[in-house]
Length: 333
Picture (spheres, rainbow, N blue to C red):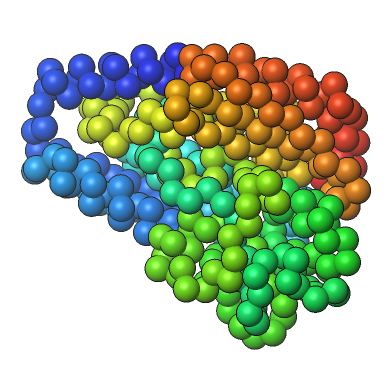
């Protein structure tokens, strides 16, 4: 849903809440079963309960296709939609009222009838390095070190900076990835700082990768709440959780990756910041082997977010991003 439609949706939700008030009701909240997904769901539940006395929220944990398919890269089996489609089907069938997602797992085009009703304030968007030894960052890793990540975006940027490192696919939830690191399968792994912080694992972080070194994925660190478009009651209840500045940045980032047909299937990054009433949008498209990174940056007024996203996209395409993307899609990336 675009920026204008998102604002209209939230205005409608606020009006509904004012009209009907916080009468007793029960919401069924769908979530994946991983520790991080459950943390996010519980966080949303607790905030809703604090906002609306008398409200009941029942968690409905589910195992998604992405949770079951733990071998090989996601690019070979359908991409990040594998983590949301069961939840979205449950929403459409009315078995749950809302679903909580990491926004970076949400595809650019939602199924018809669904909407992102609220985007919460963003946590730390950076990537984090977790190593089996003390190191100050990527530059401190020895030549030949084995680095685990499931992200083509992270891999291409690391390879560009450190072509002497060996990047290997590492999938699974946060705790299973850490366990494989601790078992000696990798020298270091790269995870989102936000997830580690939310799970109380900040002490495992050896170094935060600067955005100049590892540009984040679109929406990284942001939690979104998905609901049915016509469910005004649920929309009204979640509307107070919406963080407009985060939503503005996330929508701009998603506009770029959506236009480029990106996501985890391709080495694409997009990251926006809002400071002093200026919106800065950065994006990247890379060759998987790190041999070439295309970058584009635009800054403007927050009201020009859609224009900035279009200009960044066109700038990348002018540099040759279209040819890279077409080739990778043809090759099954």
